[in-house]
Image 1 (cartoon, rainbow, N blue to C red):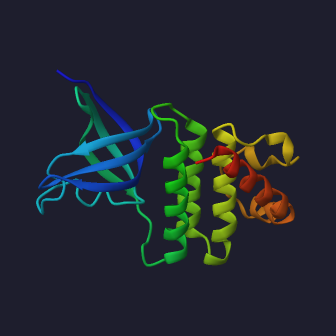
Image 2 (image 1 turned 120 degrees about the vertical axis):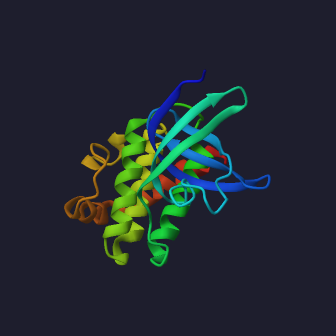
Length: 191
């Protein structure tokens, strides 16, 4: 008998497999980045169908089998409003970068909390702030993965994962330096 794990996860992307299955790229709090298969999730009577949309945060049940992870259940926690194109586009870029940089199944609670907070900020803040939120989220992701140093900015940007108005206005002051450091770190990853 296999053990069932309960965790929160971001659905970064997915692709179809077979007649009704789907393979999901998930970033979880407890396991980090995992690929998981959901059987019959594309059928109309599937209960998990709407919980596992791209860009969603879901509470999922995972089972580790002989052939990898399998999704045994899911319920939606939050989803991006796809009508809000700047927020959805920004989170899609963040998710794609995370998929490229994530080192596999390694838990990273700071990075997971950064994703939760950026997801919420992109859903709730005005579209004019979305580029700043995206920049801060990418900088915190690079910091969590060891590509950026906290001392480089002399700011409390990496001390928390929240996206407050005061924190975002502070980022405006160091934005050119932050953008330069992020671009340099991304070029050094050679991905």
